[in-house]
Length: 259
Image 1 (cartoon, rainbow, N blue to C red):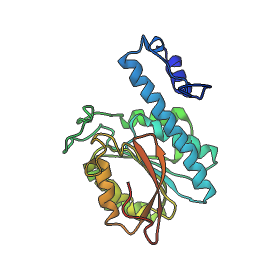
Image 2: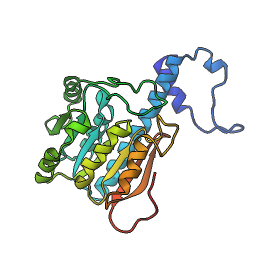
Image 3: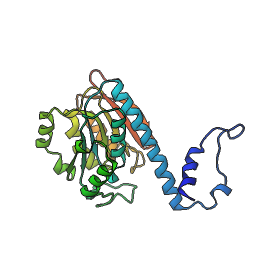
C-alpha cells in the first residue's frame, strides 16, 4: 500500500448508512497489506492523535492563562517537540522556553522486563546534533530551545533544578516519554518544584510495555510520585490508548491516586 492509501485508511473511519454503520475495508481492500503497512498505519494514527492533543492542550493553557515553559523528557526524532513548537507559534508564545532532556544516546539498559523487544540499551537514539538540525529546519523559536544531554539519574541534578528555579522557570507543559520506570523516577522528582497550578503533564506510553499494569513502568513511577508530592493531578485528556494527560492542582484530592 502507498502512504496515501494508509493515510486514507485512517480518514475512512467514518459513518455510513446501514450496517455496520462505519466504513470498514474488507479482505479485498487489505489483500496487499503487509507488516510494514501496519507499522506505517500505526505511526500515522498515533501521531495524528498526538498532534490533536497538542492543538487542544495549547488552547487549554492559553485560555486559562497558564504561562511557563515546555519541558520534554525523551525527544527521539524531535516529533512531539516540533508539535509543541508549532502550536506555541500558533498561539504566539514567543517568550516560552523549550527544554529537551534526553541522553541523545538511546535508552539505558532496562532494569525490568517489558513486552517491548525494541526497548533495549541504545534503542530510540537521536543524536543531539541531529535533534538540533531538525529544530533549525523546523524554524520555530530556535533561539528558545535548550538541550540537556545525559541519562536522567545523572543529568537531572539539584544544581540544574536550582538554576531553573533561580531563573523563574515554571512548567506550562511537561511531556514525559521515557518508557522505563527507572528513567521516570528522577523525572518526577526533578519537575516537582517546577510545577504550578494548571501545569499539564502528558505521559506517553503510560500503558505500553507492561500489559497495562500500574505496578510497572512509568505508571508505577507516577503512582509512587503522587504519594510523595503535595500536588494533586486531575485526569484530563486521553492520547490514544497509550497516553494520558493530567492537570496539576493544589488542594483536596478529587479522588485517590489517578492513572
